[in-house]
Image (cartoon, rainbow, N blue to C red; front, side, top):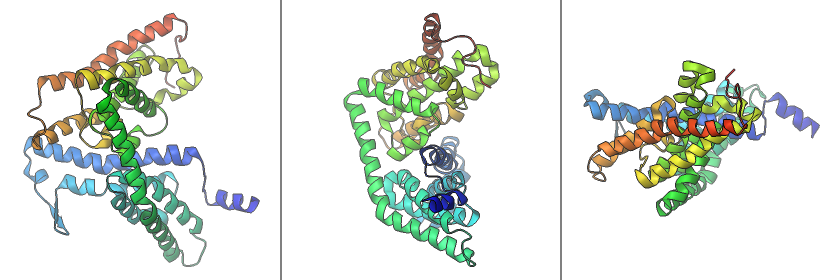
Length: 363
């Protein structure tokens, strides 16, 4: 056991929830942002502004035409896998080999490809790290082992993982359609909490393919956390804190939450209010890329995802037009209600003596 422990340490193979459940998951989300999400945004900009160079095919591969945004979206598997490899501190030959692994696992995982990429890329990356620089023909052995392990587990695991992820996502979406009030509360709270925790709510939503009403509830919960924390901490953090949390990430408050978990009460209660408002009052659906459901106001990706979904639904004939009520609902759920409700709830929490000055101060 000591020899194995020494080998794993030398290879920087750390089998832990933090390395795989936090570092790898967060990196995977960044890979998704830089491929699928950016591609979707490019396509939306091109379609709305009627820019021919963004809407016209720029490449034809195996009979399929791709726009600029389409090419970016098609690279989501390789982008996720290499991002995971970077988080796992893979040496160059392993990292570059994960491009193939990501493509295979994402393709074989189907609609649940992101979850398949997460598991398969981790297995392939650690196998590659284990053999890296252990032989004199490293340039052959390391890529061969990384790709072989990746393709093997892609074939064995990816289809099942993809189907499982989609079944869970479909179950959540079905339950939200059936019980929009209760599930609106639950989905909004859980995904909002995930956004603030050092894990990736975006990657979770992408892995589960969370869209529709459930995507709208998830969007509401994330906005409640980000805008809520930004506004209630404004007296202590000023404009910089408002921007860094409001369009950056509420994860910045994790240190303060650990020191005093009660500072989390107001954003969480706010998400439990705005979630069912999104699902029951405005019937807000997030039908853009599933990753946008877990982004909130971060870089305005969440609102862009909602808008992209509207555009897609109109084009598909599933929605007559984008109405003023649609815009009002999104603005209220994303910004206005969190900016009003969260401070009111936080004031009550302060009055109860559960939170004091300085508890939300960012370092």
